[in-house]
Length: 214
Image (cartoon, rainbow, N blue to C red):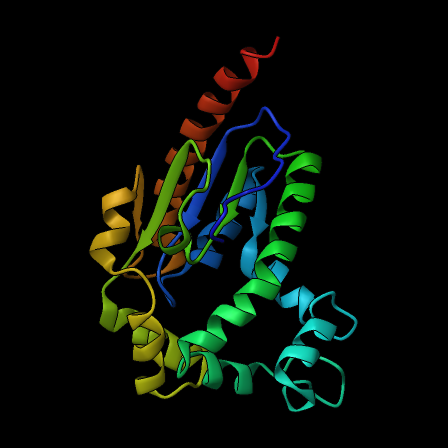
């Protein structure tokens, strides 16, 4: 989100988790959640906003038309995906609707988070910039692994996945801003030791940060 997080109110350590499509961000976030981190997922918030009754539905209907809303009242994700990845202007219009709503919900969840530290899952962290974070954790894997995972998970054609990846930061750009990296080339079990190590680090840093307020 282009203007970053608005009105954060917390003395906890703030960690950004990012990675390209299919890198395994959700699995890694679940691992940290199981250890006691508060997870705030920008994509999950966006999804909620575009479900039936979501705060984004009426603005999307007005901006893009009734055909972008399913009979059940949700945003038609397949139609919208095809539109925004073929027209950058339409993509910016959707972002102008969603981003302020996402920022408001992120701020609310931040203020009420009770975990040992807060981890934001932000797929486009590098692209949008201006997030006020103490650490940036990048989930990294080879591009061919990303493509294979997304084809299996979402049943999307390879050319569409490549279009999505082309609009995301490159692997090198993400690694350039990382303070921490988890390589996710294999199974979730392979990640557990590194998740545990980083969890201990984040707990120590969060405790140090909270003592500043005592």
